[in-house]
Length: 342
Image (cartoon, rainbow, N blue to C red; front, top):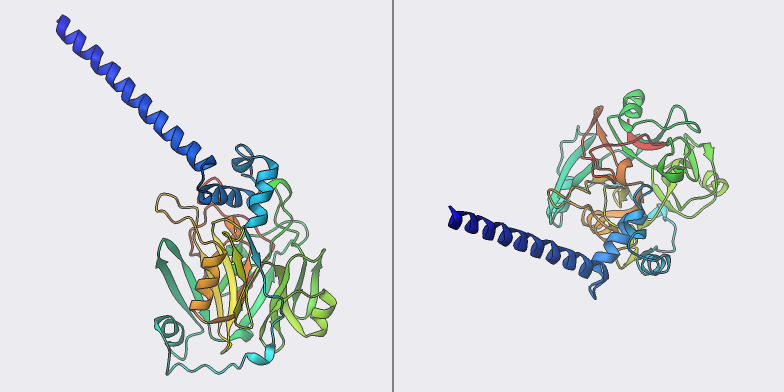
């Protein structure tokens, strides 16, 4: 009996020793990632946290404001300083020839198809690309209570009887508790300004010839140029076939992402990517990946739209993508505007 108790006591001590060793190991590993010579983890943590509204403390707990500013200033997107040249979009779709498998996925379709859904699942990137063959049917939708409260993309899409819808502009979100009702920048619908605040980012929208126009311009200039449906957001991913330059991880971290683009043949691309799903390792794309995906599928002009919890793809009234908020909960939120296929 004494020997048994002695053995049990030794086993308990050994367990405590091993457990304590493991705790110490993981603590040292975590501190090494936070403050060690490899800056990839700290850059990822800071840029991912600082682009959320509710979880910036994940960066401010561990780093000084000075260091956070240094990281943010070294991770950014340098946009191409151009505006879309509408004359370069020819609206000539040739589905009989293609250069690679990505072209084939876009171009091969039944002539009666209005849109086509392509699933993206590669290199821990998971998402959806909607290929829209008639740009004239892509318009802007807005919350029915614009200026007061937002609306879920699912509800907006059902109300507008949209076949496909994605979230569009950002919105006033002070302290992460905004209602989603006040878009940042201006909103143009059917050639009229329906919302106007200080210019935010870039114009992204369609002119009367159904060309996706991106670039910095005032609302007055936009109306003069015949923009029919547009919102404001950043950064520009591609303009006139030229990709923006990404320094570091781009400063936007990794999360759920939404973007809109148009090919030279006029085909419109809605891109919605999943993120923040750490169980499967799908953390979401950075701006480099968003640019790569858009170019891969032939985007000639493309712009990033609001992401994170706002990132939604709705098809036939149903949410298709997996939305994760900053607390890693499968939850979306009301937004101010959307792009839709009607």
